Length: 274
Ligand SMILES: O=C(O)c1ccccc1NCC(=O)[C@H](O)[C@H](O)COP(=O)(O)O
Image 1 (cartoon, rainbow, N blue to C red):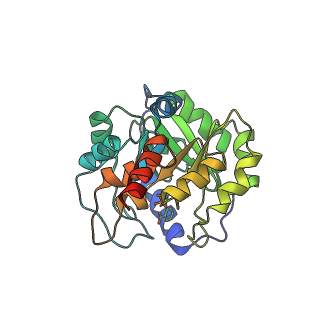
Image 2: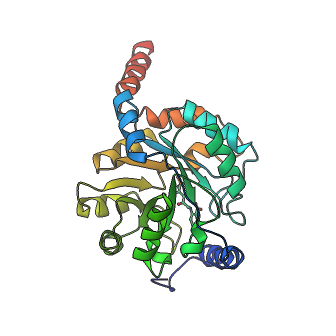
Image 3: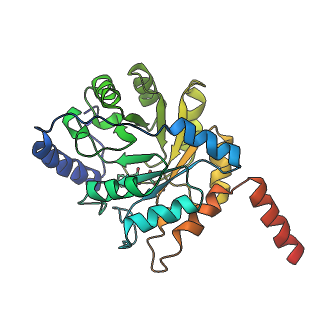
């Protein structure tokens, strides 16, 4: 791991659980994945006038106010119906309420790319479940180049997560092509959209850049797009873990339409009604 210091206790606990699970999966044979390309899905969203949003099935989390027990497949289908470009599935069981089985069910039910969101520490952690993309967090991996190569060899598209310009450089040197800038600081678990605005200008144009975490309103979507996000990864605002259990399809639609012609037409209609 790059830096063992300065992590929130919840993140330390997530990593301890990930190490235990890594021991259980160390003898699996390598997977071979026929992945749905994220680039094509992003292009299709742009052509349709939708903001490319990767909507996350996230039953709970260390920072969520509650949990949602809905069927993950129904959640994912509603997200796609709301215009999601891809689905992210938390497979971490202990702190996020996810499972590899839920990911497989979702991937069989939808036709968009599916990201496995977990805390993969080494090559054997890749061989848990087939997905189109797999998350690799720069901060938690010793041999980043080796892990990115191993993921690509299996057919996965690695989404390499960074939090600052130094980690961006490490990711680029290791061959990352899809980069997620996490607005959530893993030391304090606070989110700050300025993180993406600080890191994005340092990224070369040929990288697919994803703004992760803390995006909750159409204004946030517009802000991240203006800062150069090719796509946005959104969990909490779509899942809405509070007591209301709102419609995840509608929550997704509100963000996929942000700043598009459809959004402007709705705003115009609203102002005429007033
Ligand atoms: O979401 C958390 O509480 C969390 C805590 C500790 C480590 C990671 C955490 N989240 C993982 C993620 O990357 C997010 O689920 C994802 O970026 C979506 O974020 P958001 O839209 O803010 O739910």
